[in-house]
Length: 149
Image 1 (cartoon, rainbow, N blue to C red):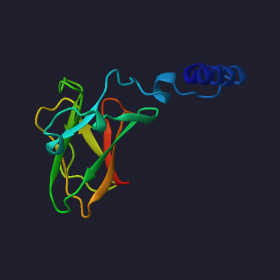
Image 2: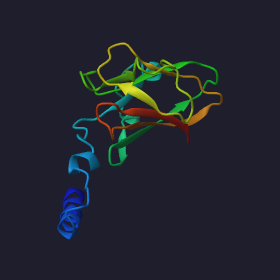
Image 3: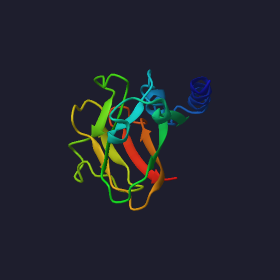
Image 4: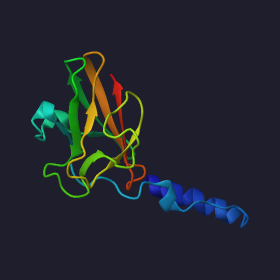
């Protein structure tokens, strides 16, 4: 439905004037939607894909999972992955990130979804519930963010 609406707007704009530069529909919408369930998998789940840590789509190309970290100061390690840690669906930190694997509350970092061993790490200052978000707007370079709930 959204694609049809955007195409209609693009058609109207291009019919009004040949001078208007309209971006390609492929640049407006994400290039690919997830075709499988993704999970927050880490030392707190024994690296299993557990239903309570399944990511839910909350907006186009944006997925979130909730986690409770109960030990302040402990380093928690995790990845975003499907049930099989499949190629293209096994997301850890990107080697391009200057900060490496350590996440900072509220700061988006690049994820590499073809990594075998690069896991994220987060050290909560206080115990509580957190939201882990992964943004696939740029499917080839998703961004991961952790925020306090």
